[in-house]
Image 1 (cartoon, rainbow, N blue to C red):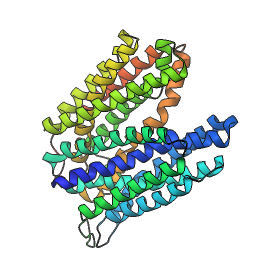
Image 2: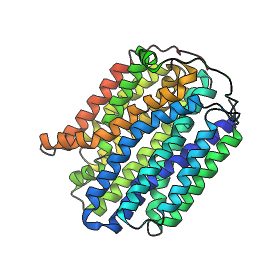
Image 3: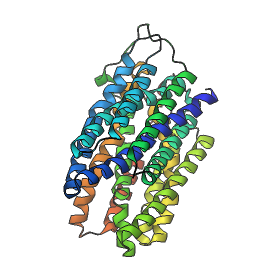
Image 4: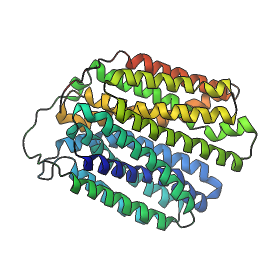
Length: 394
């Protein structure tokens, strides 16, 4: 595995996730608020829900399409470049959108195009990285993703008054990083025939289903808390929205820095996957109980550091494990796209589930933390049943 693959993968993940963090997190909500302040909440809810539903369909389809692509440029490269070029064009147009309808339409076109980049990029890990190096490659990918989300949100927040300039910078960054990745890591020709495993047969794999279920549970638990972090800070401190926003940003920042540190540690130390995933899931579950024992900003900060480090180790080990259990190298894009739903679906469900829990729990955020910890613990129990030996070699 070449060093340039690792660093170009990190940069590609950074650029892609910067778009997610900036556009979905800051720019689209701000543009909708400017266009229709009275109905901004409802319009944003519709936009984000619709885009999430699109992602559920497009992500696995994009991965499967890249599996089946036959060209001299390989399977993944044409999709990565085409998706980045299309995304860049839409972002430039979004920078000048003034009506709420135009902003929503732009996001609903942009989100699938970003998945056209993301799904084949995920599959590159399965295509080109040998089993012993997968935790390291997964750590680089995870660091890029975490750093990109943070940098995108921060940069967009600073430049929200001039969205066209931010969109242009994001479009340029994504296009340069994607083309640079393809040029630095030429894909082998995929003109020959391949042996395929039907999707139903692939999903008959016990380990594949266990890995999916475990990640689903852990992501659901994590998002139950992170999605309501601003309100949790307000509840713990009695602070105003503005003050709580600054504190929540500090908590998120510490969480991301700790996640990156955990990813680095995972890249250096991880060899066997399952014990590390089990340990990281258990530590994350324990960290979610810290704010229950200490319902204060100090408790949240300790959770941010401990939970972030555990999640960083988890991402490095779990992504490597996901690739290990894939039943067919020729269908890795399809199967990783479907496994990716274990992250996408709980992120979509978590806000509604958390709202229901808060209503039934009389607004107690402690109940939310306990439920999140139980979800993480269930993930630990599930993943412990997975065989640790790689299912195949690349």
